[in-house]
Length: 391
Image (cartoon, rainbow, N blue to C red; front, side):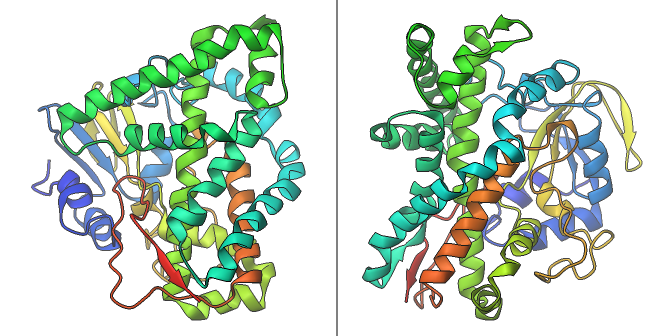
């Protein structure tokens, strides 16, 4: 037990998500594993050190990713995220056909083309809101193209994304918004399944509907759980990551010039900024077996939060962890999670981030944030509310 309130520290205190490093340090220093009463009176566990976070991520038999860990309006388990081994392993092996590095690498020319289409409109203006004009449309356009879904549906998908991840701050209203949005998402994809089986078309969604899993067609519930997860992962996390990276580079021109003058650093720079900035700050788990972690006894039924951002700044693991060093020797980090539930879309995300930074800096090597601009970030997944740039 601790008197520290991790929930307030990370979510409620003013500016908590704008500069989370001090909160991370306080968590690690005062209670690297904290067991405290949650909002409903149930016990919550918060893990912030690197070693303990990695252990939790690697042991789903204790720290389960099952559906009970979080409710965001889904009507079916988010597959493979909310399924633990051994079934998770079988689903992941099946989905790897579309997400492994061999499958993703051929997408690079198309991603580069889409990046430059956006830049063709932006560059002559001499200014933009990076969040609205680039970070939001790029991954969403890539996602819809990969899925084989109409680009005309983009605004609908973006509304669904925001209503699931960033609904009203009032808990009761937020739950209702998520439930309504989840029903809309389910209806959208449910209506397509039988039609795609009768008349397949190009794209991952059609391939998924028409590819057998272990000798049988995927059931509607399995397909809907996969589609729901793909929306959240494909439309949100890369947007937030691009926001964080370009904001950092605009505020640190020496680091930006490194990428302009030495574009070969971009791959390593992406990994280092993922570590240092960690846009996806945390992941939820449900403890399903009594255990001891970091010297703290945790109980089955406790909800757990693994604070990835704190783990990635742990000085016990990284030298000068808050220093962003594009040539850091140790780049392994937990920005994409770890263990069996390592982010399935890691290869696509890395490709989008690398190509976006390469092409942006090739065409807009100098840019700044206008003086007096105040940028705030959503908690949990650190997306900027705005990111005006001038050049």
